[in-house]
Amino acid sequence: MAIRKIARMGHPILRQKARELTLQEIRSPDFDRLLHDMVETMEEYGGIGLAAPQIHEPIAVAIIDYQDDESRYEGSGVQQKGEEGEGERSIDLSVFINPKITVLDETLQGFWEGCLSVPELRGLVYRPRKIQVDYINLKGKPQKIIAEGFLATVFQHELDHLDATLFVDRVVPVPGKSTLAFTTEYSKYLVPEAEDEIGELDD
Ligand code: ZN
Image (cartoon, rainbow, N blue to C red; front, side, top):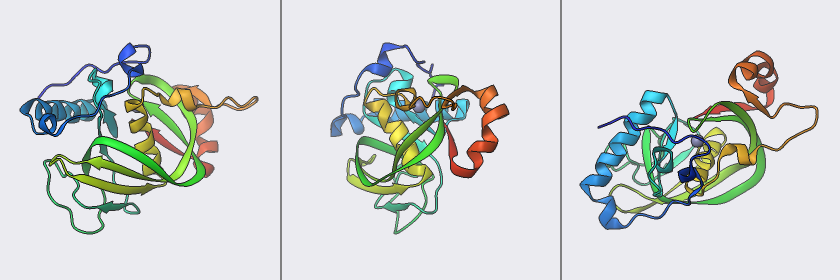
C-alpha cells in the first residue's frame, strides 16, 4: 500500500475521460493494489470519496466512504473486499466500477463542495437530489444503488471526476453573492448562512 500523490486542478489527467475497466482488469492483483492505494490516500487526506483520476489513473473507478441511513443499498456492496450485503444498509466503504448515473429526481439541491484536487476552495453547487448509480462491484457483478440528499451529491461529485469535470465547473456565479470561496473565508463569513439551506461536502 502506498499513499499516492493527488492530481491538482490544472493537471491534464483531471481533464481526461476515464476509460472503463474490463472484468479481467477488475480481478487482477494490480487493480487490488490500486484500490488499496486509493483507500490509503483518501484516509491520509481526509476525503469522503476519491476517484482514480485524482491519483493519476484514468480509469472508471471511485471509492466513497460515507454513511447515510436514508439511502438504499441494493445488492452486494463492498465492505472492504466484497461481502454480500442483505437488504437495506448504509454504505461503509464502497467501490464503484464503471459507474453510470441516472437522475431520478431533477429537483436541485445545493451543497458547498470541496475537493482534494482543488485544495483551499469551496464552491456552492446545485445538483439533482435523487439518482440511481449502476456500477460493477469487485466481483464483477452489476449492481445499483439509489442515493438521495447529501449522498446523491457525493456520488455526482465523484463520478464527475470520471467524466473530466470538477466541481468548480458547476459553480454558478451569482452577482452579489459568494458561490466560490477560500476555505478560511468560507468558515468566517459563509457557514452561518449555509447552515439553514445547504450542506457541505469536502472530499
Ligand atoms: Zn473531487
